[in-house]
Length: 67
Length: 245
Image (cartoon, rainbow over all chains, first blue to last red; front, side, top):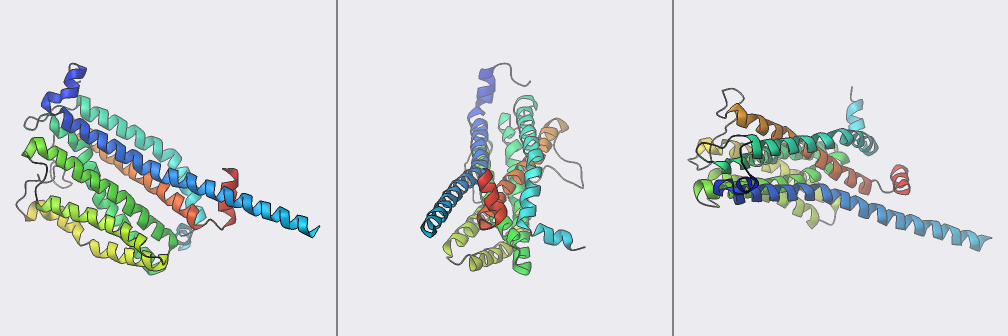
């Protein structure tokens, strides 16, 4: 371990803000690049489920009319 | 002999195989990035000239390397799409553009933050940095170009051409530190000669580079899988997935 205490690790002899800012920004971009497709997939599934329900409903009502 | 090539073009086959790959690659990526980051931040020794600010290298170098190698993936996918009209290649190209924009942005931002304590400035119009900025505009340009067309067939073809033309920029970025006088330091890791970096600093860097490659694979496949579902929404197998979800 290169640092004696948490305060020392946080400050990194004056370079702390630069180092920690870089890591924080990188983490947020990584999370965003994973979140984006997962979110789009969820939206797609929700939309398709809605369409399936509408289709099923229309099937039913047209069957009712025939009978 | 060409069966694998046709299989590769089959969206369902890709969806199945990438699902299996993700189960293995996602934990490996997370593990490597966590181990590499902790090693680099806490255990690697401080640089005798730059002090602790050099610890940014553990993200700056991997994202910069990937911002370039990701371009090859995008350009090659674009070429395959142009030549064989393969839909999956077009999806790969657009997903790679999104990944590339994110990683190039990170390369520029972490480099800028590293520049402040090291060079005393956030930004210089230096050959390496300027050509990397052009790379960011290329990635963003491809994303914007695709959105600009209503006809998605022409859109993807125009994107593929732009991706191929932009390849010119890649050797310029690689060679910029040798061709022009530059603030940016030359490569520390060399394949043919002895690297100018101590093993105690190099091992965590290597772990981070491999970790970021795995992350790239994971995020690229996640992007492609979503796009494949959207593209194939009329087919039976996608409707089955929707029903089961």
